[in-house]
Length: 150
Image 1: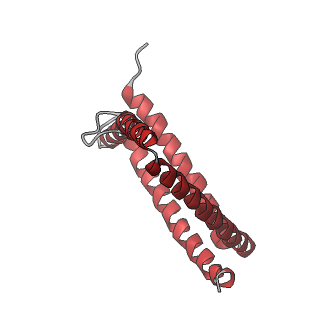
Image 2: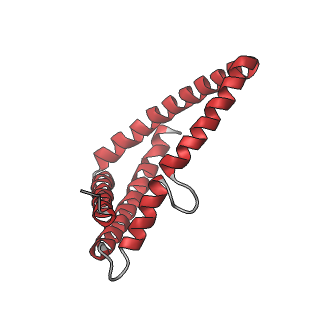
């Protein structure tokens, strides 16, 4: 049985809508609960410490690679293959492959008169709600970061 692209697109749209709902509720809890916001601010301190350590590791690995001609040649080939594969996974500018194709089909499918028309409004609503709570949560966390970073 062949796959109907519009039905598959609705599944993707439902998944993305569920992600918006989950993230929106998570941000809402952070924004409305001061103890969770305090803990999140503490966690951000440690996450940025980990990110700093990882950037130092990456810098050291890059310096080792640049100092060795064989590793440089291998690295260039590896990045060329990665770029080619990323085009098929993420998509191209015209939306013929990967995630770009799914996004293009979702846009077409959600237009009036199309199969997914009913999904466009609810997905937009939940996306806006998620962003509203995300900015409120970031504001609450930002208030508490001054106590961690004096």
